[in-house]
Every structure is written in structure tokens, then in C-alpha cells.
Image (cartoon, rainbow, N blue to C red; front, side, top):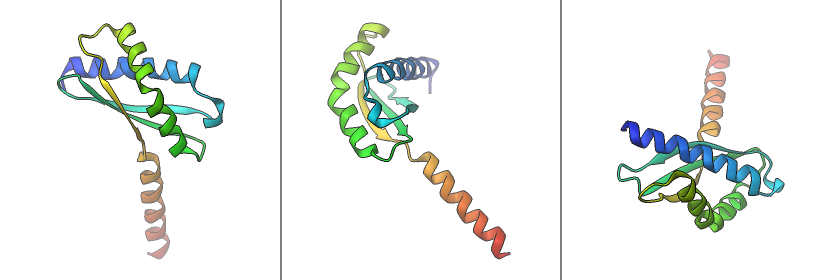
Length: 111
């Protein structure tokens, strides 16, 4: 990606982290913005989130229902020509790493 998209990704990640920390209920525990990917035209941002709590489906519903508000705040803060449309996704990277490590552990014990 370009330097511009990298910069916008980082700025969105920082802004969303602040917003979520201040506005999201404590029912979801610690919510992390793990990654943000912005399209080349800067009109869409895929935001990968994770939570230590098990109710991640509810977390995604709450984030989706508030995304317009988040987009408005980001637009005011970043002053971009277009505020990217936010798409929240559950980051399953940690689970995938845990699964691979478990499989490798089984291979080590079987050998």
C-alpha cells in the first residue's frame, strides 16, 4: 500500500481506539482494534477487532449500530475528503495461531 493509506489506517486505528474506550460499555471487557485496512480510494476501511469476553457477536452488532457516529467523529478529527465507510470484522488471527500451535504440539508429542 501507499504511505497515504498506511497513514490513514493508523489514524483511524488510533481514533477508533479512543472512541471505543470512551463510549463502549464495560460489558465487552477490553476491546482491541487490531488492524485497519483502507481501500486504495480511501472510501472503505475494514476494522478488525477482538475482545477478551466471549460475547463477540454482540460486540459486532453494537459496533455496527454505532458506525455512523464513529464515522462522523473520525471525519471531524481527520478532515479527509471522504470519511471511509467502516466495516467491523472479528479478528480471528489469535484463534488461528492458537490452533496451529496446538497442532504443532500434537505433532511434537506424536514424533
